[in-house]
Image (tube, rainbow, N blue to C red; front, side):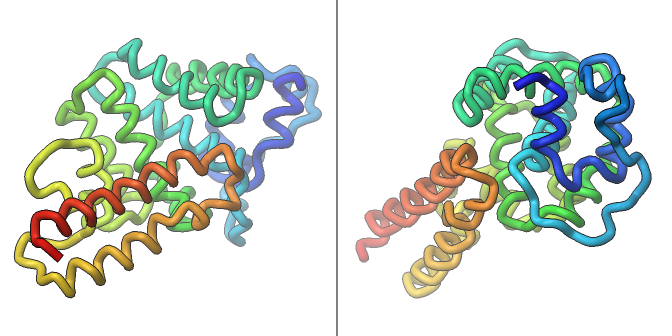
Length: 245
C-alpha cells in the first residue's frame, strides 16, 4: 500500500477542522495522491456531526499530540522518537508504522495549534479513546527514563483541552511513577478511603479502563488498554494486601 492509499483509507473526521488544516499543509510534500488532487483535505471546521472514531483518526491524533509532548522540553530525545516508532511497529506492523512515522517527522517541523487541535479531538473522540491517548503520551514522556516537569505540564494542558478530568489525569499519571500512594491515585481515591469505598472504586475504574471500551479502534490499540486495566487490578491487589481484606 502506498502512502496516499494509507492516509486516504485510514482517516475519517481528521480530514476536517484544524487537524485537516495541519494535514493539508504537510501532505503535499509526502503524499503522491495529495499533490495530484486525488486526496482532499477540508481545512474548515466541517466536523460538527460526530462520526465514530476510526483507528486512523486515533492514529493521526496520537501523532500530533506526541509531537507536542516530544518538543515540550525544547529538544527531541532520540529515545522518545524510538519509543514512538517501536510502539507503532508493535501496533500497526512495519509497513503501516513506516507511513505513520513519515507523517510524524513532518509534524515535528510544524507549529501545532494545541488548543484548536485538542478541541477537535474532544468534540469528535469518545472518552475512553481520549484516556488511551493520554496513557500513550505519558509512555512517550517516560521513554527516556524520566518525565520532566515541562512534559507533565504539556500533557496536563492537553488533558484539560481534550476534556479529561483532573482525577483521570492523576490516575493515568500515577501509572508511570513509583510512590506510596500510587495505588490510591490509580483508583481515584484517598488514603482515608474505607474498604467499601476501595471496592467500589475498583469496580468503577475496571469498568472505565476495560479494553472493550476501545475495541472500535481495532486490535492494534488493545495492548495499551490492557495495560491500564492491568494496573488497576494491581493497585487493587496492593490495597487488599495492605488493608488485609
